[in-house]
Amino acid sequence: MSVSLKQIRYFLAAADSGQISQAAVDLNVSQSAVTAAVQQLEATLGFRLFDRTPVGVVPTVEGSRFVAHARNIIAAVEEAMRVQRSAPAATEGTVRIGLTYTVSGYYLPRHLARFTRSFPNVTLDLYEAQRSVIEQALLDGALDIAVILVSNLGARDRLRYETLVRSVRRLWLPAEHPLLRLPRITLSDVAGERYVMLTVDEAGQTTRRYWAPSTFSPRVIFRTSSVEAVRSMVAAGMGVTILSDLVYRPWSLEGQRLETRMLEDEIPTMDVGLVWRDDVAMSPATAAFRDFLSLAAGGAAPGI
Image (cartoon, rainbow, N blue to C red; front, side, top):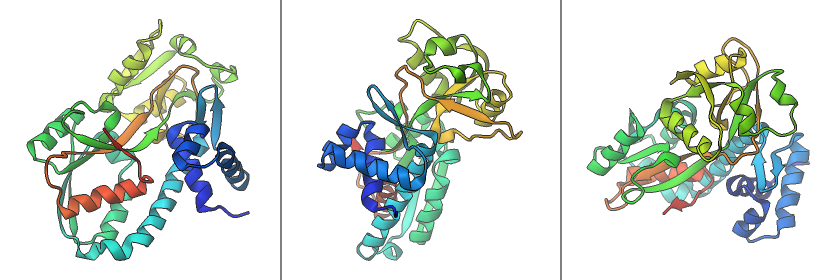
């Protein structure tokens, strides 16, 4: 059985919305059509793409990995269809792009490589900084566009944004951890464990926000700005953490295994997106970069 573009589009719609029913509405098809497409895709791939929850669906670890491949497939098809219209070789100029740490390390490199191949006459000037610094640089006109964690965006009233990826946050545990044997895991269970806190890209502040509605708090034993340090410490059994699928890898640098599990509590996604000033005319080169990433992400809707 082969994989069809329809199956991939239906899968992405379900992954983006978190609900089969909402995906059906967005696609203007029946709910059974989306369900069938996802089931056919799972049968072809040989693994589950979603965990079913009382409120919808959440990509499995394998499903989250396939999301990236699926977006690349759709983007490649879109590029092939528009290549004659966009005339990439004729587009030239410099684009000043702000990036935060997580974006530059875990999301953007593969897209930058494809963009530079498609638009050889566009120069990309990349600047890594904290989100607040990037937002101010956009407002001051020092940057043309940015790729940051839009789930943390502050100046929503003055900047336009478009979500590219919504990455699910899961509990990270070492192999054979006792919590892995529980049928359901909640923040109350995690509160009893030693916790390794990531601080880069405002991860610490985000963690405190989604713990705040509960009556519990993480028992933090170590804070670090290094994702690899968190990965190694969790894999070594020194604690657990809650981080997004975007930065998850199943093995530490020392070759120790990490496992992940969904939490029953409502944990927000980590959203990567484009940000720019809507009241300033966008250069053709900047517009080409924005459109390229939007297509690579499957044409997500701009934020309001």
